[in-house]
Length: 455
Image 1 (cartoon, rainbow, N blue to C red):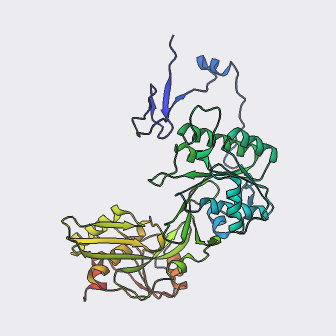
Image 2 (cartoon, rainbow, N blue to C red):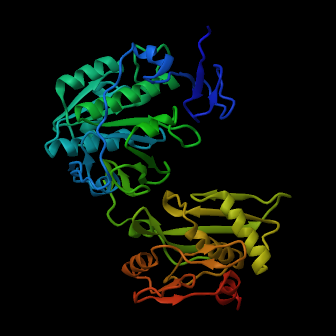
């Protein structure tokens, strides 16, 4: 009797009855694998050699266990993103564009953890030991007690880690690892999945915190199967524009702390320096207010952050006007333009629109809607907003202004940096006294009329 086989895609999870080189659901290549059922009843029991598993211990929700121990690195921005420090026996995945500074960040972190008493092993699969040592000398870290090796064979790496028993192991990068029990080239989906699984289970079994570096695709996602991100405890993205000195370490998944937390660093000649007051740094080069320039009071993770949103509106020489966005969602810009035209009577037909978030920062929260609308109208009318005002609020398709979360924290951050007024939506609960003058228009049309109506 023929054996029934089932297959599934490791990228999207779609099930199929036969193997193929390409998944019909998500279009990924070489992601179809055979599913082997684990059961102790019926015919499937033979696949386990006739052995039964042992019963697991069950607990209830009221059971209290001690919090996992943490170790702080001493770098406040890194510890913030990790949720208070490095957790023992955790698996972390760090992704970022080539040349953005991932290896520099992790080498500096390894040196800090080693100086704080942890035994640290740094294994590079992309560079030789001499290249890593040269970077360490440039950063002034050559005397840090960090163990170093250059290797790609996963079996040798695990044997070495088991013998050394470090507190922290850094693998740079997971795409260069080669497992000899997998019949494919290094960097392939199968190799990345197998290597990440072995390293993660090894970390849990031996109590070793493991950091894996991952390359990213042109779309900005970590290369390889998405199942790798599900395996690990924490996923961090190192972001930034090469033309700017700022770098953002963003947590997109964290089982031991808040997700979407960020840490801000500045790239200098001696490596990455933490930025303790990113709002002041992002606004440091802001001079006399110009048309199209608006200060937005945003929230990144748990911290309030002020940044400058810049807009430029100019007549288009082409039949199809251009819409260019850096640091924000292009689809949301199109929505704001449509609302301004249909609800407020501010036309942008035949005009090129350029929008930029200064400093290389990327904003994803809808609270930036009102600041973007203010920047667009300011640029179109060639009229600058008051220098002492910050703007935030969400815009609906009807032109109504919707309140946003953590209003008080945004206002406190603005007041700390010397701003005296804020333009916000009406709140159901009036914000506590913050020392700022609040302007709260009923809707977007009233905002445009109040700020730019006399021009």
